[in-house]
Amino acid sequence: MNDETDFSIARCVGQIEAQYADFARQAGARRPQMAETCGAVDELVTLAAVDSTNILARKLMASGGLSVIDAQGGPRLIAICADVQSAGHGRLGRKWGDKAGGASLLVTFCTALPERLVSNSHYSGWFTIIAGLAALDALHGALAECGAKPLDRAGDLELKWPNDIFYEGHKLGGILSEMVSLPQRTGRFNIAGGMEENGDETREPAVGLMFGIGINLDIARENLPTPISTSLQLLYGPLPDSARMRDMVAARLAVSLKRRLATFVADPQTELPKLLGETRSRCWTLGRQVEARFTDGSTLTGKALSLNADASLTIRDGSGACHVVKTGDVGVLA
Figure (cartoon, rainbow, N blue to C red):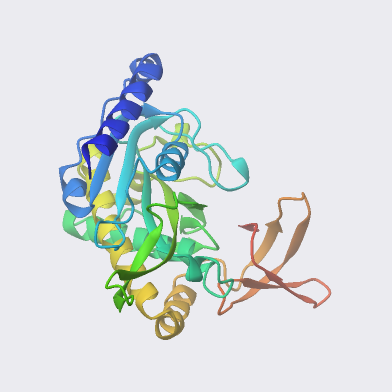
């Protein structure tokens, strides 16, 4: 990365630190210390406080302040992590609550993907699910290293379609993926082995993709934001202190996300059936009565029948009619 870009990031982070200094002080927030995560990503940006790591990620990627494509034309993985956020949110604008000191993992992973895949409706729905599977990988890996076991019942971590991490009907975390247009001068991939007649590398259009991920690690039961929310320390033990657990989970998430995205991008037709089978086996939603809520305010109630090849969900309503849901928030009914 050149000095001009380094300065741009440093200047932006410095402005944010000044803007949110009072908020950070009141919350008792400090810059996360994440040595393990730093070694797992191409670049790590940490802040004590920010409005939203997703808002910052979008600003930096769109301006070219974060280079998500390296000098050879390959993707980079960058993590932006904050101790607290003032305006973190999930799908449909829901507020994400958090507390300082590593009580929550608040991170946005930024990378680049070929535009031909992200714009393809057959593949585009899978990227959020890939991030969800990477989060499960990370949590299981960190828990195994700690020797942590379920505290009450022998449940397991699963995905609630399309973007939540669940444990026995309770929400542990959520994922919000968003596409970002990259500056024209930087937004192109090198096609491996491809050369133009003049000897220049052949490039293809790329888009930025960011995955905002929030996971409750050490939130007291009385501070949970909703009745169905939960936190890792309520489910598993023993665990290290929350700041250490944050670093462990984030580092493993980065490794798994990078591997899963690279594998899928390299050969999506071969990987899709494997991905479909894995997700079906780890999906809390399937077979349950659900209510889908859409951005226009409408709802659909019925049984979640199947996860489809394009990552959509088929729901059968009370009359027996089947509906394919591609976007929306799907809650599991009691």
